[in-house]
Image: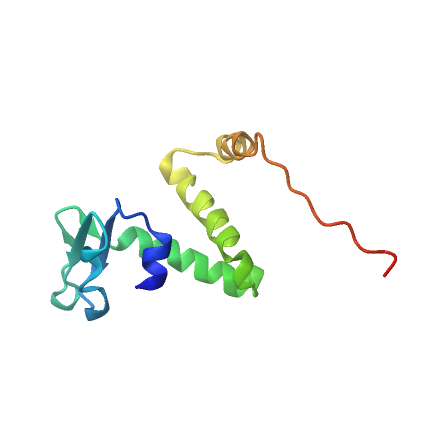
Length: 121
């Protein structure tokens, strides 16, 4: 729970399955939707876990196949990249050109800098 609380806004509705590790999740967030997977329930009202399961599956395949290693200090960057690509996929109405336009709009006012190498030492 400490990791979940540190990375999810308190105003969020958290959707989980019925695993015991999530029982108190609702105590920390605006709402907690639960689906009872053990009873073969996959949707309960607006609660479901299909979106996150699909997104996480793509992330895991990418990390094992393409990237293979990610230091903890950069994990948030990898997650943001996968989140952007998943959120802006064709199923959500974005083609390659629209996705590129959105990415370019997102870099306005940002600058990536690196430390200069210490060539004297």
